[in-house]
Image (cartoon, rainbow, N blue to C red; front, side, top):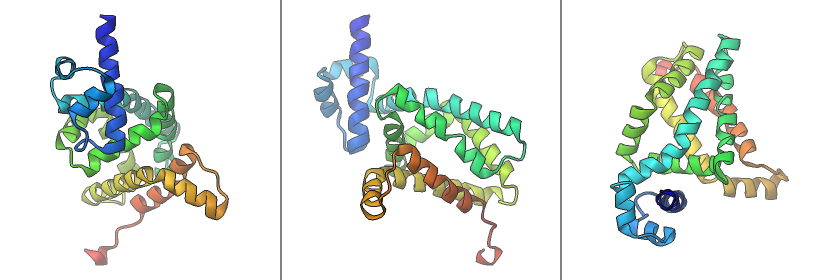
Length: 215
């Protein structure tokens, strides 16, 4: 049993690193088995398919992050029913940073993996997230909507997707951005600083009143 567990973990660890670095589409099972030093039969035994392996890699993070994020949102809204959008987004910071305790550079890896799923149109992954973590997503969307009642639901749909796109780009470019900021402005930023820098921008973009003349 211990050997089976060790094999499964090695596969997950290898797949996670390769998926984050190369993307889901560009990472073959052969490459994963080579890095994990296992045979293809082991992958099929533990996961059944590449899609299931992708979901399992994300689940290691989502199983920890989603409940923690939901609890943080409930806590801040219990303390202040009129919590601002900036407050809502800020509740996600600590649950994200806690992922570094789960895995080395877990926060960055998790956001990179989400970004890969977003830009590579992994429909099955979106289905997996909404099916297994839908109650947490609904809580977040509800909290955002109640903090910005002046934004119609259809407009909020677009703005939240724009928000996700901004986060994906920022995290994909985080290393380069921090290097430029240090070279040009003498700033020294870690992953937490980057996340906190983007929150006011996201809050302002999501909550800005709708320009009716643009419709």
